[in-house]
Image (cartoon, rainbow, N blue to C red; front, side, top):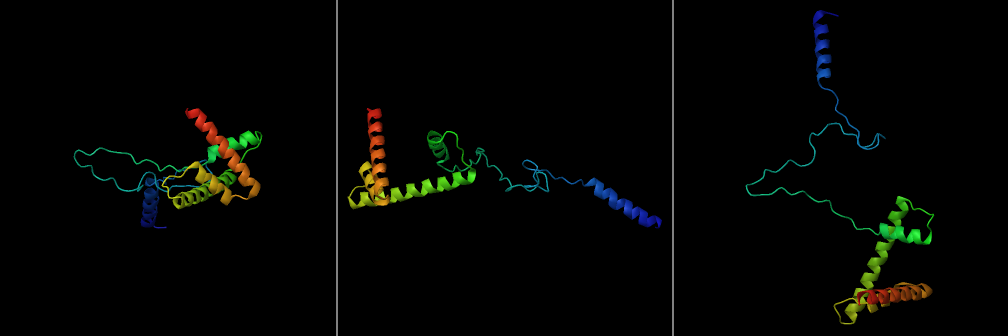
Length: 155
């Protein structure tokens, strides 16, 4: 190796040392979510504030779920049983689908009745139409009981 080749090799190793790799782990160290740069190029560039403008933070969009209610009912029925995240997602989807179906059917019944407001009677009719036999009777019974309890609490 000549002297110039040694200098070139030294220059490349020095430049590599000057640029350390800035990798950080995000999470619990399972190798997922690695970032190759630290703080560079994140998100959109900041807009310049005009005079008189206040800085406002963008709020995270909230997703409404029935998870806490499903969990409460599970603990009332089976106090010693838990539920996985995947099962909770499935249950949440099921409850959401049922709610949508009841709401659509009740809205249709209300519209056919010439009213603009959905009443407990419309919900009851939707339950009778959507649920089979014995299940419909139990649902109507529980719904009537809930409406009675609510009416007494309001008075």
